[in-house]
Length: 313
Ligand SMILES: [Zn+2]
Image (cartoon, rainbow, N blue to C red; front, side, top):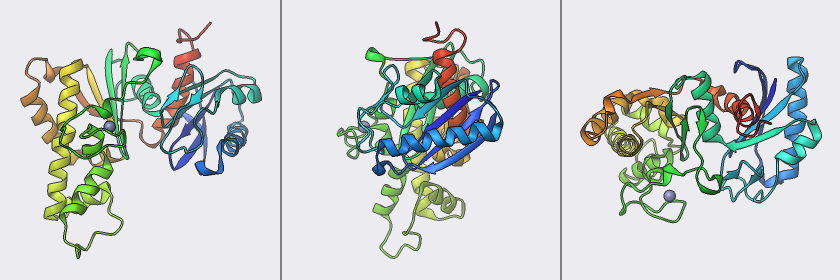
């Protein structure tokens, strides 16, 4: 029974996940990162105890997926946009001491990728790329069930590969990264730059709302969807050419409207990827739904400490 912790920019979800990937209990709390890391740590501990009690189980390990960058092997947070003031804080050590179990930490895209590779849409695929498109674009590469890590165990940042050098300024400081052109805020930003001041849907515009408006026949929203399809397609075509994976699994909020994009994306891949067997690369939607990140957090523990895990003794 794994205590699973999913730390996002807006909320922290905690749950108990069994060895088959089923969520037995769960609780949520707003992240409220500004109240400081010790406050969040305290809430996470309390929620874990309450979840274990509700499920009637003892926690045998704790897995954490967090918005990044995080350092899996030391258990510390990096300079995370959404978690101001948490830079350098260690979450693995205090939770381990408190619960007397092993604790494992990964980037949340890596966590969700492990979940989809084990129990979801990417099951039994040898070479899997998982992509989450929401506020940003997170990408993870799983090879033979193992997360690909770079030098210094770094998580590769494929959301920041450049699609258009003349594109908008990205949060990383460079221009035209995939994320700056194809994540949800890029869709909203572009549409707001096009519409007249009296456009009736200006307030509270989101990527989801734009997709709904496109389905209702709004011409500018339809153009935003076309543009989104184009930039999603370019990034996915690049990854297909670079890795020729067995499967690409698409998750995240923007992908809830995937039916609007998929045909166009497949067309770009068909035109762009002729030197790799792109027709053999599956393009599928993530299948674990809202619980993907919690299930992923549990997989993080198994990936590091379970049978045959990276750090299992
Ligand atoms: Zn960037």
